[in-house]
Image (tube, one colour):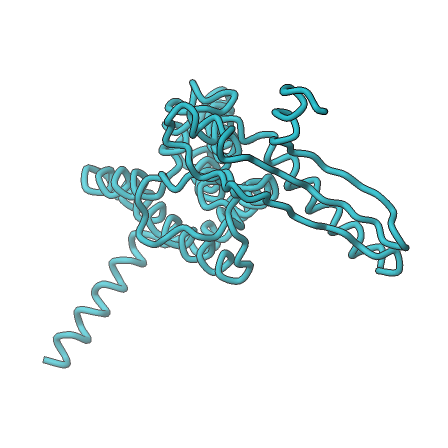
Length: 269
């Protein structure tokens, strides 16, 4: 008869296992919680997102499949396992739950709404044409980032991790999909933008890049995204700035465009 300690250990598990059975290699990650023993329910925490039903992601592959399929499934399993291990601030009862408010503050610094508000404010307060041009292109870069991330998420339809709590800062649309991380793309793009346009010293550039990395890490600690979501998001945001440079809108070009639109409007009238 199992001891009480063994019963408690058997009610919770998160592991990756592999075994060859009848020509198939089964690779699965399993997370199980029993409702009566979930820490969040015992202490009345708001962390009630954990399902009482065993949640299993099966990545079993047949040995007669291509090496690409086997490698890809193994890569996804490792990604899932590592993401679960890093989600130490998913709720207040997590192992690092005490620093969750601080991590959420870092997360908020990479959100779209504060960046749009701050950029528009700087645009209105700008005193020189150079500053106005810079802030205008930052607004366009943020809009480009939102569009590209939304298109990519719609194409992949990857669900968020099961540990994620739906308590993110409100957005213009429902954030159901996970790949890529919009916070990561925005942080990487803005960091490169600031490093190229505003920051003039090497220590400040390092600080800006460190901030972008911390925003990406916050998404993992809060179990918002998988590791691949954040990694791809950082790379995507870094490359987005190259597109922003190519599409850079000068202040003179904007004035010509406005004059053209006003001229057409007066001709119509």
